[in-house]
Length: 159
Image 1: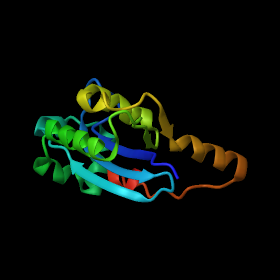
Image 2 (image 1 turned 30 degrees about the horizontal axis):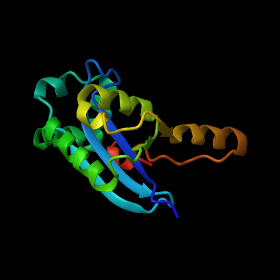
Image 3 (image 1 turned 90 degrees about the horizontal axis):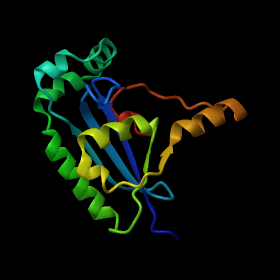
């Protein structure tokens, strides 16, 4: 039996441009290879009212409807969230172990991690597992679809 673990992550952002948009929420599930949950983490990230006011229209609607926008003023500072993610990673992954990110369209999340959480990014392996790819294959080849809830909250979108 392997000790290998997977680092599932999802971010909610103010848009899709990591150079101008910001992270609003993060959710993490660490599992073993049998997909048993070993740890979870969820945190809303504080952003200034100016950042919230300048979200793109899609985000204003969906983050407003999901309740995320209302939680942002009480969120945790981004640098503290990064420290939490580093601590979680060090708790569940040995220093020489590859920390492989897993998620839906994970490259978008990774770009934001690389931009805003550089110390956390240093702990991550360059390989990622994009679950969306499997969904595409299963839908096209086997007519199997995944009923996504489209909650547009990090915790609900993670799997």
